[in-house]
Length: 201
Image (tube, rainbow, N blue to C red):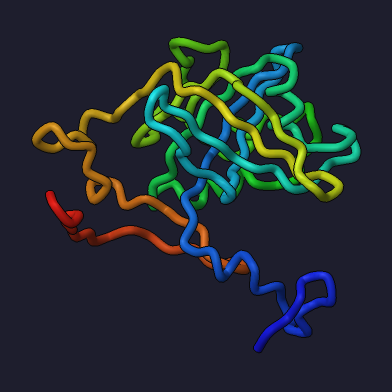
């Protein structure tokens, strides 16, 4: 099968996000200029640089009470900060509960029951029990083609690691089983790993 996205695929559901899979989930917490807080998962998320450490996430839809975007991007525009909370399998239902299209006054920490703790380097809350939290300062927001497509880049200025996830000096993902997004309504979880050496190592 071959199709041009502009012509449509003819399938019951769009296969695009099932092709690029699995994808890590950036559970993004933000605070607006008025002090209101937001927590929302994004599956267009990844690390993009080592020095300085940088991450990105993309928001691809809008809400009527936020104009051209959603709460996360709107808050970051105001305060230039956000926190990435890593999602473990155990928190799948809490993460999912925070994904609703709530109005801007709704605090998803409260709706989902996600435990809250203050960040250290930025004025924002983080998910207290997450395996890791990346506190970020905004570097740039890039508008992509499409009505509501924005990519947010941030420099990581603070890192929290949960103590039980450190094994022999390594942040061991098998201690918490990262949750990943697949296509449609599907998710997967990392429960095994293997190592490969690059040529010449």
